[in-house]
Every structure is written in C-alpha cells, then in structure tokens.
Length: 231
Image (cartoon, rainbow, N blue to C red; front, side, top):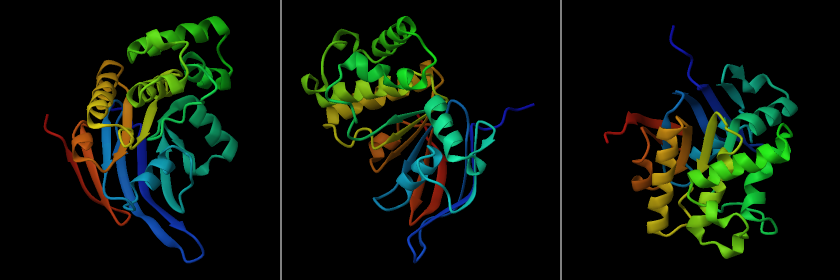
C-alpha cells in the first residue's frame, strides 16, 4: 500500500480583511515525502500566503491542509504550534539569526525550545548540522562576523537541527548575490537528496525554481501549472 503524501492541500482558500480579498482560491496540491517543490510567481501571486498556511503560521479561510496525517485546519493553536516546533524548519530571506548569539547558540535554539535534548546531545546535533552545511569552523562566530551566504548556511542548519519532516524556504536566495545564491541552492538540493529532506520553496527566480523536482506556478491566488523539472 502506497504511503500518503506528506502534505495534502485540498481546495484551500484564504481571504483577508472585511472585503474578503482573496489571496488564495481553491488551491489543491499534494506534496510527497522527499520532494523539492518550488512555488513560483510574481509578488502578490499567493505563494508566500500558501507557504504560511503550509507552515501553520496562518490559517485557511476554507479547505483542508493535512500534514503527516493530521488535519491542521482542525487543530488548536497550541497543537499547531507544537507540530510546527517538532516537524517544520524555516529558512527566510533575511536569515533571522539572533545577533547576540553565536552560530552554535543560534543553531541550538530549536533544540532548546523543544526541550527534548540534554546539553551534550544538543552540542552533538549542532556540530553535525554545521558540518553538513560547511560551517563547523564558525561555531563561536557571531552573525555580524559572517557573510550573507554564511548566515544563510547557518539558518539552514538551524532549520534542520531538530530533524523536521518539512523545510519551508521563503525566497532563501533573495538577499544574496548570485554566486552565494547558487551555493545556497546547491546546498538545499544536496540536503534534499542526501537526507531525503522534503522542501517547499517560494521564489520568483527561474534559476532558483529549476533546482527543485517540481515547479508550481501561481498567479492571482490560483495554481496555473504544476510540472516536473527535467534535470
């Protein structure tokens, strides 16, 4: 018997404001475990809204989102927060590293917030992840001492350290020059393949989108196309 998709998005719509402006209109998508899916479209197309719904940062106006067998739309706020902390990792355009913490301390944060690991285990997991992203020599550095590409690598390590089921990446190369952007995309693809890590990435860049297994193109809150990438 085939396993269920990691994510089942069923007729999901999202409206904002008293005039019920539609950000998403009846979107239906399945995302399999281990897939790298690129959400593509211009600003305002709905890709970031969809990413926020997938990540449990916002709630749908209608439809269902089933994540790893759980209907997220029926969970309490507390249950959604717990699911997000345990099963989802985040990579943002502006890194969102805490400037007063070292690289090691930034990456350890999800483990500390989860509360399920002791200090020795945290240290081991942090070093493993920083080694995966090639930043093990920067343990004691602060964000201000890193380049943009290095900060994004640390952010990716932080997103992966608690071994989430899903990584959501919102324009992860949008604040990087082209050379560092390519390196970050190659790293995400490597992690997708080597760890079988499921990734959903929002981007407006054709070059970035092509790194995934699938491209879902959006416009005005609708899915225009859903196609496999030929590598």
